[in-house]
Length: 153
Image (tube, rainbow, N blue to C red):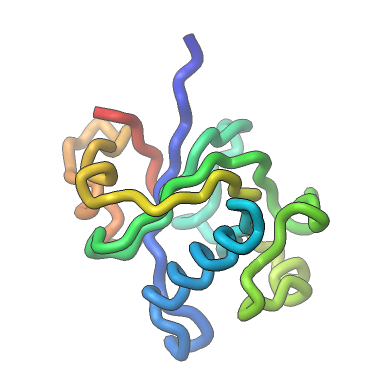
């Protein structure tokens, strides 16, 4: 049986902290609600955000605030890095506050998310870091690493 691959991103503020992390969360959740449960999620491609090259398929993603007060869960249809791969722009779009042309030019990592839904703190806590160290999930993303791989406990 193939292991289900789930990745967690801790959401942060955007645009020089002019858009708070809670607004980033709300924008993605709202966009998915009005677009048949679909949204495009992007992050700058840096060592602490990028998906490892050995991971070809990500099954699910969890986007959470650092304190775990709000989280969403989604299935990942496809993912890639601009300009090597592009998402299906007919089905997956960014919230209106984002500039897709800037993100394409800067080589962001993107994820096509579907079946986006909000999850409870209890559901978030049902996942653990795949790292050999047994840190709680929120502690694992509290430092420089805003992206971790997790599995169900």
